[in-house]
Image (cartoon, rainbow, N blue to C red):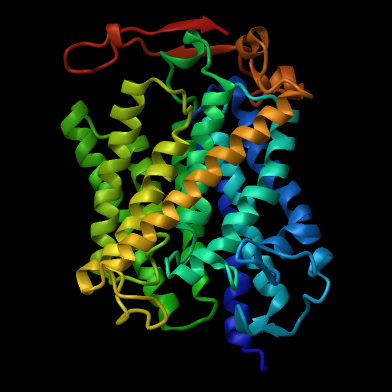
Length: 437
């Protein structure tokens, strides 16, 4: 096969864009926690880059994309990237070197466990987190990636569609995040309620970097500089904008004020929702997918979480689990072969069976996320504690677990908190108080 230099250059650039998303996630999550936990939170993303970059080369890529074993997993014939070189692999990407495809997929494997960290922020011990993401990425992620994208994987054979990771990345990480939050337990009442994000500009910047990097995530999944990449590019931007608008409008009606955090969260929700559909639907369908995604993710984060009382600290489940689920369903509704002949027609194009395939893929991904996350965490807890003790949480994980502070001129452990009871009828801040810890 002949390597196409244009396709190769495009996928290399997209690989770098997807890698940038994980530092973007560090900023997005880091700005939402207290300043005493910002470094520990950003470390969750950076250590994912470090560990998964190594494990993917050693075994992860072979397990996810290696020669199929009964539709369940890849074998280890590509362990250590043996046989994965500069020649194209016709089964996956016939116009780029196999190493480029491997590197592109590695960036997906990196950010997926990092997404989970949003649910357990401010309370999970660093050693337990390292063990968890290493085991989880080699088992749960490799398994679902092979099922959905691997040649011979049973979900791929079933005909379910996932262009860039709605099931593999977002449902898997989002549901795993919820399970992790439930297993580890909630923060103390004083730590869980009554505080504002310590640096909203950091969070908004992180969301902007995620939006930028997501073009590599989705458009790069075309694996070439072609028309399909153009469609995925436009769909990505359209859905993000529609979801940001939907979240802000819903928030405005529900709470009386639109917020910058809402706009940032809505954009990410739209990016999540369109990910499985990006290369299978029209731009108008992407707008609809994003708008609905913004509404349902807002309801999941603001209404459902409050009612059920689980402590998904930074809403990893509400945005990624719920948004990814809606996106997978929307793919079954809106997919059309006029956009991608290698895909399938969805319900609105005369093929209701695609919805059934999407629901099966969702169910299988949820099952793996629940079982794998629960078992891995329980096994780790036999050797090391999963969460920090109360005194450490009061002091802040930056100092207790990492021996450093994010802001040298700040008063350690002091945060501005907003008490809902101190808000006027119009919602403006009347008083504030400083608390230690």
